[in-house]
Image 1: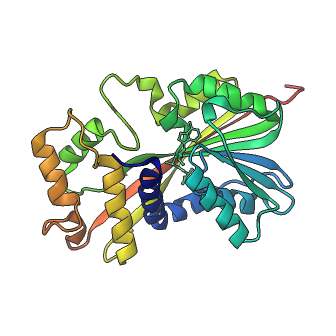
Image 2: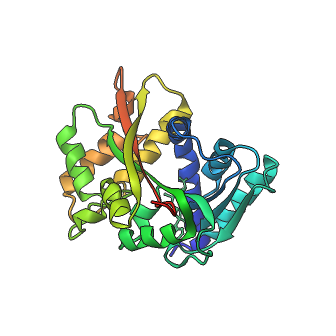
Length: 277
Ligand SMILES: C[S@@+](CC[C@H](N)C(=O)[O-])C[C@H]1O[C@@H](n2cnc3c(N)ncnc32)[C@H](O)[C@@H]1O
């Protein structure tokens, strides 16, 4: 059996390998919004803290961000990164469970979740309500998640079946309630009492020829999305997945001439009512 530390090490490796693809799209998202100057933010499920640092950069001088995560080795990485970039005064990492956050009411100007709340809570509306309590009146909650992909050109039926049976990053497991899907995030915000709601989708295109790093990032994305066998997935689909999505397969789809694929991130945001609303 794998130890928790080994599991975290592998996950960290995947997060880092995927970064070359994810970072440009997160950058696009952050360019589309300006976090308030001199603000106080919370990054829930901050992982290794890489994007926490991008958030504090966006918010500018005088701002500070707390990254919170359940996994110690990720928090250690975050601390090392903030020290490398001389940001320890403005970024802190603390261990905590999103289901049991212990911040005072009205502490933060904004809360960000990147690939977190939609994956790790069974009751997203209550989660958003709990986060709302920690946000100051007029402050914002942002939920950003990997929302779709078209990565197997010419194999759309297979891709749809892999998506439908995947237990990966966006589970569509049998019995899963439709309102737990990440694309329902705007409804969660609305039901939790947020106002000024908006949603927008950002695309990351990938075209060949690409560097080894991009290739590695795509292979990791395939694995994160579809790599875990699910009993719902047929043997035939699993074999096709291996034939097309493994880097050592002679038929790896990334080697077709003129490969093109894309994935999307969707940002959902809402504001907490200000006192006079
Ligand atoms: C897909 S990763 C995303 C990490 C980071 N936000 C990023 O975009 O790179 C999900 C993160 O949520 C964390 N996580 C999972 N369950 C959690 C919980 N109950 N409370 C806080 N963090 C949690 C995991 O440890 C992991 O770092």
